[in-house]
Image 1 (cartoon, rainbow, N blue to C red):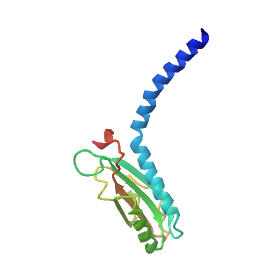
Image 2 (image 1 turned 45 degrees about the vertical axis):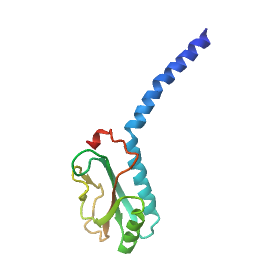
Image 3 (image 1 turned 90 degrees about the vertical axis):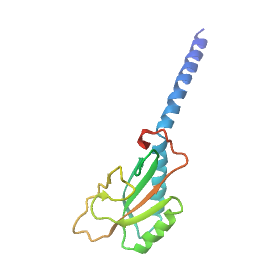
Image 4 (image 1 turned 180 degrees about the vertical axis):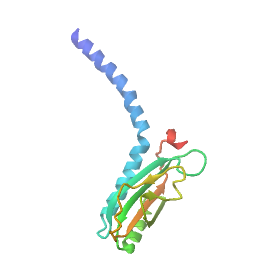
Length: 154
């Protein structure tokens, strides 16, 4: 009798857990997609000797324009004295994302036409005595597996 009760408890637990796990995966789908994109960008940046990754920031949702949709945006604050290396990095990133650009970084705010509805800023403290050149390399893209039911897309 005890074994039958344990089996019933296990079955009930599994039946209750499956919808909760499915809901969790559904709700976090866009976050996981964005994290994968940012990690891919970080690994590509790490391949360059003349580029130092300082910090990354990212966001997803309806970032610009009207209507509904999910956009993904990732920005990397980098330090480099070689603009040639940055151009090569951007060229390699363009194979992975719809739009990749870079701009000199002066201050903490990430400024981009792709962030009409959101704001991002880096936490790095820029020392005025530091003569290093800082740049922001960023991507803007969509993903075929995005969860368009996400409230951030409206």
